[in-house]
Amino acid sequence: MIKANFKIMPSNPYIIFKALSVETERDIPKTKVHLEYDEKNLMINIESENISSMRAAINSYMRWITLIEDILGLIENG
Image (tube, rainbow, N blue to C red; front, side, top):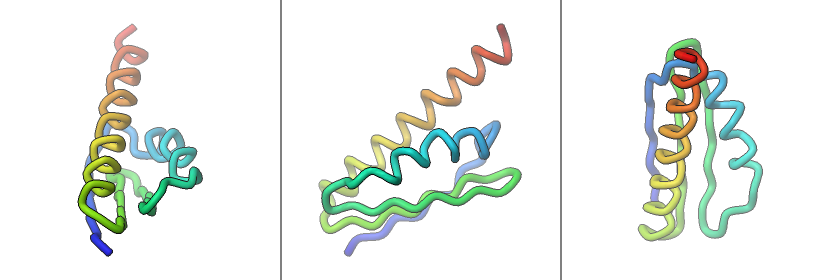
């Protein structure tokens, strides 16, 4: 099993946690994802059976986080 742990400091960890929680409930082949947050950080823990699945999960979560941050920026800046 391959493991990767990320700790990022987004503008609003709670909103990103809630948005991504839906994705962690889905059954993704060969991959398990666990999310946690505190007031400043979002922690992403990924376990995968192989490097290809790990890469796909990392890319997906990073793209979703970027998209959510972009949307939040648009909302905040009108």
